[in-house]
Length: 222
Image (cartoon, rainbow, N blue to C red; front, side):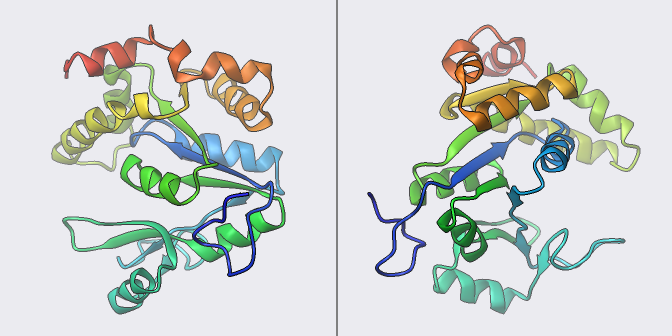
């Protein structure tokens, strides 16, 4: 077996499963992940670390691990992160390696909600990761979802749509593509991928070339 970069010396990765779920804001990742965790309470959902301040109702260790910039930079130096990004806001976000390694070591299943840049970083370290991209049925529906939240100013909606266009263009680099038009169908498709059964083949990216959202985005239509 190949030795994983985040394993302790003298240890190799077991047969645990690592599922990376990516998709633009408004694609419904949180809803899908919540339903999967409700159905599979033994699955582990990795909590990201960030240097930003907690928002109303957020709890340390539940929504994020809130740490200082010095602590985060120490984790970078110590190679204690599977992936990280430093955003224009000045804040860091990243995935601590140790909790993920610990679950995979005992043969468990880990779910990561990571944007494409982070997903590609994880894949370099853990090439056995299963890459799943979650897309909305159309850009018009994505705009409707973002605007219907009621807590996102118009300029931020436009910024998120611009980011979504780039993120959706990364879908060809993922093994699987699932379009979240109906949540229950979407969850069933992600579960099929997790189980690795024959139903998962229909969700492989190469079998999704006719999905309208991708034709729309990859043709540079906004």
